[in-house]
Length: 401
Image 1 (cartoon, helix red, strand yellow):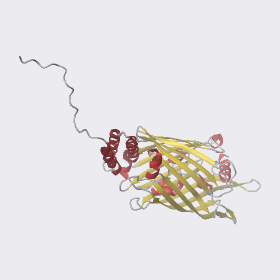
Image 2 (image 1 turned 45 degrees about the horizontal axis):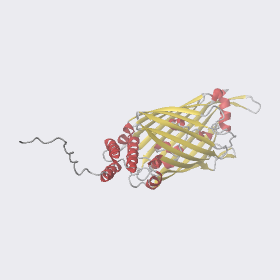
Image 3 (image 1 turned 30 degrees about the horizontal axis):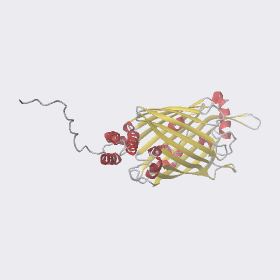
């Protein structure tokens, strides 16, 4: 009975997140992908990078410096499950952006079927598949050592198929998005903190829709605006994110969350989605990273009638630069100490700036921006020309007589 209740809810609501009934098809596209994203309240429009960007915002593929493979298993209610695989590949070591490939498989087994008189007709199955190709590229920015700043654009195309009780339908959908990370001009106007900010906009699942037995249903198009911010506590990253989403056939919803990395290896996550019809909308999760591998888990509750859901993700980064860029969260540490050094330069604390820049060089010995900060600090510090003369002695010289 629980399974029948779930099927009714799934087909009538955009993943239980909207307060109004839905009329779109391919509702499985609302379920989200990636345990990390789920644990942060599914707020990824401004923060998604690499393989995760294929689903959340293709513009994030422009931030793909190495190959990345992500596999996700979602255990929904009873025999309902979803599998997701995504591969991100840099083009010219990321200088020309990144390409993403993904596949989603959603299935419900043994759905009880009845005719118009409620007589049992046995069981049927539902199987939904989405195959996607995406591309993201930085189109502006990237100068003066701000390696991740600028404007990123991305787009994706997907083939969607649904099959229920032997009846199938196919459609083609499109995604588009942008991400922006402030660069030198914004830093000069607002300070170093703004460099840790990211903005995102996306429109997902655009297209004509699915047709079942001459009845057409539109795709679940959703427009999103997102904000992300990274803060550092004792050198460990605290990532915060917030999204505002407007589905085609539902009410506007707000979602948000954060993650904190402990000792650069273990992450704790907490998120929230408002307007969820079943359950309180809370999300939680954890992650573990070791060199080029990352394992993530996320939990989401949907009330007593439906219960809890569990999502597991495994990511593996490979290819040139993968180890050096990921070991010990190198990128986050470098970004933290560079920001610290620049803040010290701006405030006139040149000796402290030198110490912070040296911490960067301990992690990344060839970091051009850290070397530039050392040169700049050295020019600002006044050298000691000579030692002060000793104070005259108050003692009288001995009389030679």
